[in-house]
Length: 429
Image 1: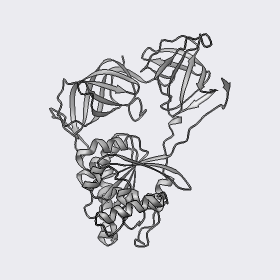
Image 2: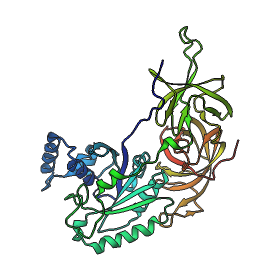
Image 3: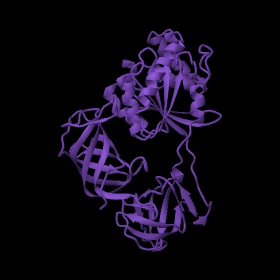
Image 4: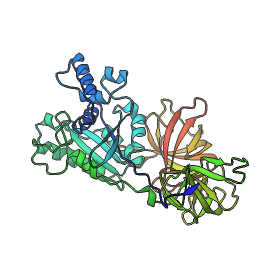
């Protein structure tokens, strides 16, 4: 391999999720974004116009641009997460149009889990609802610190400033209970495009940016500057004559940066060694940053296997068998303490037991309410878990990859919960 760049950084588009109540206009807003940024091909637009006429609409139903499943079109709601890609002169975007119905909350969480920004749509006529609070809390729980509320259907309240200010006050009062969250509130009318891409002339009392302008300027957390985390996916040992002594640990850099000469520690063993090579076929790098996939070579023959984590000596993770986590329960079947699962945390899979339910989260106050004897569908709760083997982890706020996990049913192999490890969790092994 030949030495290439000293540093390789992959720039990615802004990811944002769109959620809200059923019929609040999420898919219409996404369709308006795509249409007004000229992302829709002529033949695709003609197809949507024809479909709108067949269904008896007097106008083009923009929601059809994202509601692609047959069941969704028949019911007029979003069920699955629809991903769309678009770009403007300033930025590239990946948008996740998520379902609004309460029974599909797990799909909504899936869409928000990789988002930089959560766009929550609120019907100006109905204001803040339980589902608004649920979506805001779920977005914050999966690590989204930038939430934009789009107060939609302003055309149906006569573009009245008084009504917008009323909803704005309610949103601000609720959002004050969301920790470390940046909140922005924008009045929009997705049907006519007011304040979606272009600023509205129907709401002269609003002097802020349009929704697209906000997204174009939205800050993104720089994972390259966070403490280095490298979950090992595979140990490469070809054993061939040409590469007889080659040994490297491959995976994706979850966060931070690494360079040749760095001193790394492998967890859970706690053994350290020096980086002597960073390979990214067909190049050999001197430095690499998240989210690159690379193979790291160490000077000493350290015992490392899949599921272990490499970090800098100066920023160790935690290692333990006891976790305290916030979970979103996805399964229709309720579960009680004592239940057993597979826990998948980054590249590590271990058996786990639900040791206890600390309490469920009150969607109004965001407080933990003790006394729950079981977890039910769509519950958000704080729980205690015990694992069969030590896991390498961080609090989610510090490292999203090592701080998150899913629970998988041992019998059905279905994902039954998603979890975020809390800052007070775990005991050092």
